[in-house]
Length: 301
Ligand code: PMP
Image (spheres, rainbow, N blue to C red):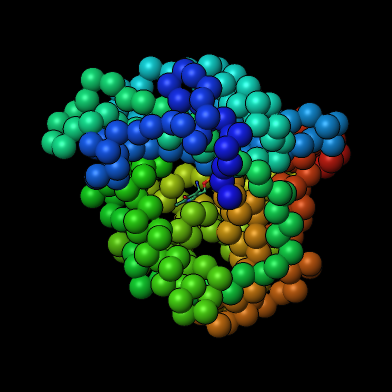
C-alpha cells in the first residue's frame, strides 16, 4: 500500500490528505506522458536522524528535466527539500521512497503551458539488502533514441519503454531486463544503470543514451575514493558475457549484483569482487552521513 486514510502529500505548496487530493483528468501529463519526476530515498541514519540521500542532486535533476521538456519550473531545491523533510515527519517516515512529480495543467493540445504543478508523495521503504543476485535477460526493446526524446530527462513518458522491457523479462522468468541503445550498445536497466567488472576494473556505458543516474555518479565517486579503476565507454553486450561480475545501480535498487545475463553466470563469486566492495560502501554511505562518513569508512583523506 502506498497510502492510507492518514497519509499526507505535498500538493502545490500545501500538505493535504492523499485520499482527498484531486488531479485534473484533462491534464497533458495524464494523456501524453508529458511530465517529469524523481525517485529519492531517505534513510534512518546510524545516529537516528532522517537523511535524504543526495537531495540537492535529485531536485536539481528534477528542474533540469522540466526545463528540457519546456515545462515552467518555479521551485527552488531548498524549498522542495524543506517540504520533503516536513512531509516525512508528518507521515512519520524515515526509511522512505520519495516521489516528486511535476505535472502539466489541463491541455489537450501539444502547446506549451504557462504553469506547472507539483506533488510530492512518500511511502515506507525498508533498506534493501541486495543479497539476492539477479538473473537478467537482454531485452528485445531498445532504449528510446536520444534523437526522439530528451533521454537525460526523467520524463514520465519514457517509462512506457521501461514497463514493456521489465514485463517482458519477468514474463520469461527473469528478474529484470537489460536494454541496449539504438546502436546495440549496452544502455541500462528499465530503472537503473549498469556496471560490469573485469580483472578488478569497472566499466559503465558513457552518457548520451542513458539516464545519468545519481547512484551511478556515486559509484564513480566511490571508485575514485577506493582507487578502483573505472571507465565510461561504449560497451558491447559480448563484453558482459565474459565479465567477472556485473551490477545494476539506482536509487531504488541501490547496488545489486547480477547472477547471470541471458543464462550465462558471471565468472566470479560475488563476495570476492570489487563490485561487492562498492555495494558495501554504498550501503555505508546511505545510512551514515554520506561524504563525511565515506572518508571515515574508507580511512582516506
Ligand atoms: N536509469 C533509469 C532509466 C532510471 O529510471 C533510473 C532511476 N531513476 C536510473 C537509471 C538510476 O538513476 P538514479 O541513480 O538517479 O536513481
